[in-house]
Image 1 (tube, rainbow, N blue to C red):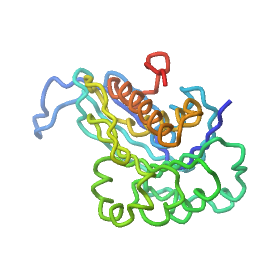
Image 2: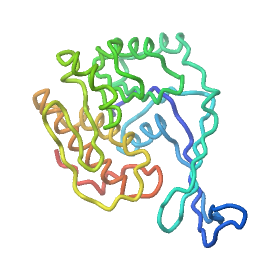
Image 3: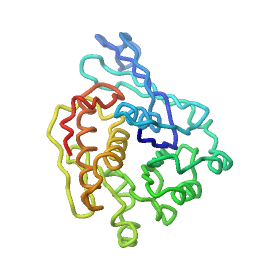
Length: 264
């Protein structure tokens, strides 16, 4: 069985689905009546859960103190009224000894899911990238030379704009590493664009985590025999399909492999 190590910040995603039939007389806000509750793993935990849904054996190394994101959502329209985040100030960095004691050779790939909550520093990410031949990074940090040994780096449109100057100045170093997700427009790798089908989007929560899980799964299990460029192209196409499935569902959903048109 394929085995992947996921390292990074995790959280609990709590969804409180409500109905709202009237406004508060004291302030211009709706009065919410909770109807149902859903709790799932988020961030690095969501990446790990989606890999497991694809049949991958996963080890997760993450923060001991839990971050919690609570969303109050309209049950009918899926409109989010408010999100409350707790615990972000209580995250301690990963212990150096923890990294030194990892048997890296037992894994087929390493995913670094860095939401920049304090669990991983740039130096630690650089250290991890030097331990394995297949390292994948999803980070909220500004990309720098510390990421030069990462195999592939996933960023979204906002992060792409934020890192534009650095990536242009260091084009030769990073041109074959960066994959940009573009929301409803799909994804971009180098000068190639990978479109997605138009669907009714219900919730984009966790779509980036799902993309990363699908990308790594396809890259290490379904693309052997292809050229290096073709491998990542096929993996991106599969990752697009995974995230497209997820945005049609409520909350931080998990990949259903049987529902995918997953021929590669």
